[in-house]
Amino acid sequence: EGHSIHSLPLGLLYSYFHGKDNFCSFSFMQGSKLEIPLWLAKGLHDSKRRIISVELPKIYREAWRTVFSADANVVDLHKMGPYYYGFGSQLLNFDNPENPEIAQTILQTFISRFRRIMDSSQNAYNEDTSALVARLDELERALFRAGQKGLNDFQCWEKGQASQITASSLVQNYGKRKFTDVDG
Amino acid sequence: ISRQVLWCPSPHCYLGPFNPGLPVEVPVWLAINLKQRQKCRLIPPEWMDVEKLEEIRDQERKEDTFTPMPSPYYMELTKLLLNYASDNIPKADEIRTLVKETWDTRLAKLRLSADSFVRQQEAHAKLDNLTLMEINTTGTFLTQALDHMYKLRTNLQPSESAHSQDF
Image 1 (spheres, chains in turn orange, cyan):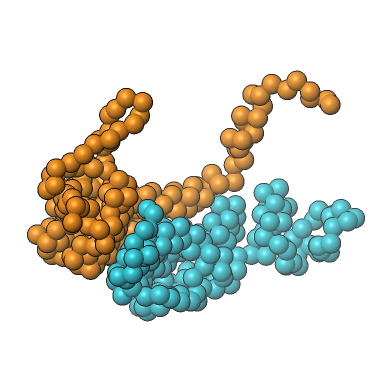
Image 2: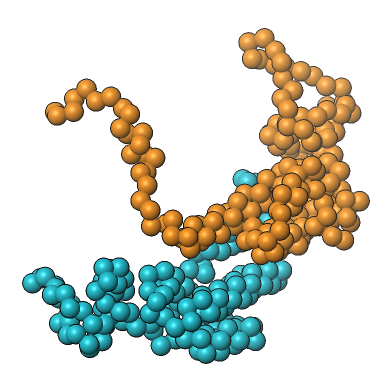
């Protein structure tokens, strides 16, 4: 057929390219295994021509999926990710026969971890949240921050700080500009 | 809310007339302002009373749904009146505690509803009798979480176009 088949484990997002004049060409032996960035793999992927096949990073494979379904809350998604949800969703582009299970595990993981993120971001138990946050992936951390902000805004209002007028940062920076034609 | 004003309002004021000794209803902002200037005494709303609030708190704890609150601004009014006119409110400390307990119960209930909503992957939810203050405290978090969950759910569909989600 003349088509090469390479298997590429996806994992690290570092750039593979070095080369003069920013031009790179490289050739592979059929069957070689490489680590390449996700965006490149997506570009090379073609379900009809099968230039590449993709090896799943271990956290998306069956053994780890079992761990997730037992108790997703114990997993350190920051260490295993830190973009577990985003990267996992992108992985579904590669026609892997396990895709339905992967997609389901990612969704169920989110659902089972949701409660703890919500409760601790709202300080429901008045406990130290840093241990929990350390185990959150980036998407969950952004959610946690959103929850904290809601709570902080409420507490700020409760203390009466919301009624203090402070200069907007736009205004503060505006005054530092030099005006050459102020009076027109 | 306001009472007993001896000060004569400006000719353009459309509130009043203020007759000494007679209670008058005025906007909250005016009541607070007059109170700060020691021009009046405030009468708390009828629900700002220990027995009534205990009843509300107990009902909130008992029911799974949200109790209709006597005012959509119960938190705001409690804070304002207790801040500026606690001397006009009998058992102000108890009232503060009771309102906070009711608030905590309602927010816990809201989180429970949200978790149950997420677990069942519902498409729609209807929560009656929430106040704006409660919605604002958790709203950003909830809408972002549900947005993520929606995107993860579309991953389940096997069509190719569903898989190029940007995170």
